[in-house]
Amino acid sequence: MRRSTLVVGLAILAAILAGSVAWYLTPMPNPDGQAFTVSKSNAPPVSVGGPFELTAHTGEAVTDKSFGDKYLLIFFGYTFCPDVCPTTLNDVAVALDSIGMRADLVQPLFITVDPARDTPEVLADYVTAFYPSILGLTGTPEQIAQVAKAYRAYYAKADPKTEDTEFYLMDHSVMLYLMSPEGQLLTLFSHTASPEDIAKGLMKYLPQPTS
Image (tube, rainbow, N blue to C red; front, side, top):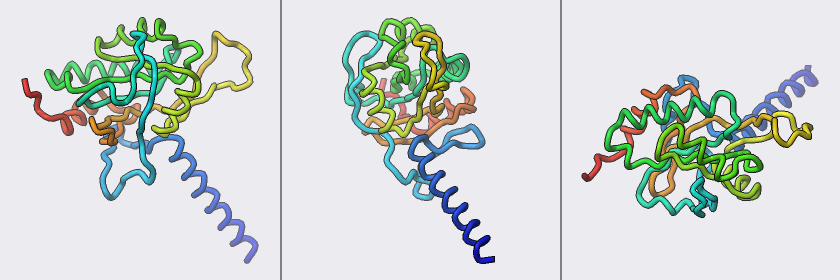
């Protein structure tokens, strides 16, 4: 009896530790697909966000301080993504179109998790096809690893043993982050969030435009 109890206890402990590691790697998913609002009762146990230095699809070097008083809507993905990335960017475009002038307060960022293939030129062709203000960001593998760690975003080659350098898939987190101009996480949207969900979440936090 004691042995079985010990086994069960160890299994529970392992599950708790696994859950903690999963949270560290990826933001908290939300089962209903709408915004996950950070509050005192459900605030993440670790900070999300931080400084970064990357290269925009325009060729310019940018940091987290390059966007003034804009709210950042951040998504980690890659241009060869067959499904969730184009769907999410399209949803972001529809949501921004629907909130009128307040869209000017938002800077959407598409941060690649595949810098080997996603050069500024490749990103430029990709992101501008969805919405004019979406900015594609790339960098060195070290820079991408740093920003992904800061945002608790997971990514890895789907087949880590592949030697193909041209045709491969990436596994990655699929959350949208809404960050305040001060760099604070305001809310997360899951990949199941509709454009209406995203627009509603944005309207909750965006102030009225001054002009």
